[in-house]
Length: 102
Image 1: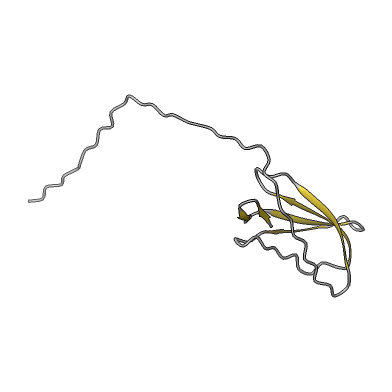
Image 2: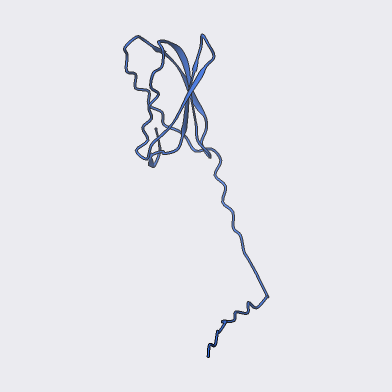
């Protein structure tokens, strides 16, 4: 899983079985990899989502004993830039407590 700048960690990858409707979910690692283990053979719809990126999906057929590799390259959705200015006029008073023992 990657974007134009490289690996994309934290993206959600969901495989939805076409026959049962059951879904299997995984998240991409820091290197952009993911693993959906113990998927029964069958037809699946793979969906990939990540905040600020366009969702992608792809149909796939998984055969018995097959290790499938499906790579996605996500495209950035709308990019928002926001500036926040904090202005304050209160004075913060700090005091140090002192304890005197005799």
